[in-house]
Length: 76
Image (tube, rainbow, N blue to C red):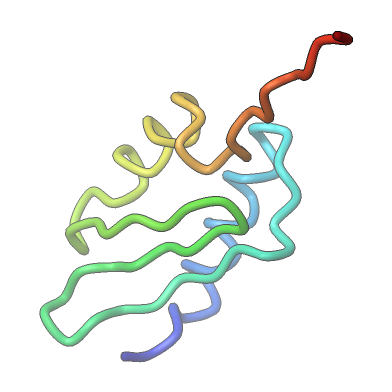
């Protein structure tokens, strides 16, 4: 495993910022098979090296990396 090169790391951070997310807590690494693992504070996903950005953005828009909603308790 190796961390993404600086241009790809900047791209990841910019994509997160463009979608209203803070890049803190997100990391990405290249895996030995050429895929990319992106880990966020509330989720992780693996993407093929080619075309990872479009798949990541789809997951980001779908809320895959958002915190799970906490059920509200009602007063008894």
